[in-house]
Image (cartoon, rainbow, N blue to C red; front, side, top):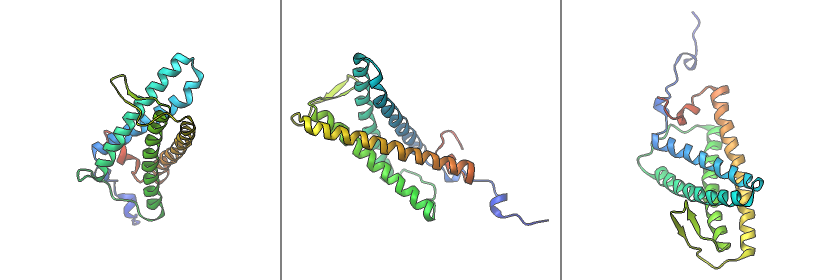
Length: 189
């Protein structure tokens, strides 16, 4: 009887290497908000002015929500309650950690640029019509043009990097079959 390698005979232990529930919820909430914000921003130019303005208001509200989720996520990430699976080793592990740090940094930059852009336009930050944060400084059209350019550029970089992140998860799942994707899927035990 031939001896099989341990990796071929052992069943993956996904539950032991899963992220905690809060991390999973925050991850997918972040992903959903990023996609919704990007699609809104890229799509509102195709609609009449009234709908475009509603889309822009929704974009601002969802952007504020993303900023709050990001703050919660960063606090959770640094807290003691977060349960992490073992980190990958070697070049792939390093690339994954670098990509995650880049995504966090870009998301913080994006939220900051969005807030500063609204204020540079002299507009308050409206949150679903429930409350408004007034502009913190006087309007500056030149600054607003610079900020919206950066905001758009960072959005595309986030989408590209998030796409690579998703592609890497699919490679892990379908090619490497190492259970990495299962660590972040909800409802899998």
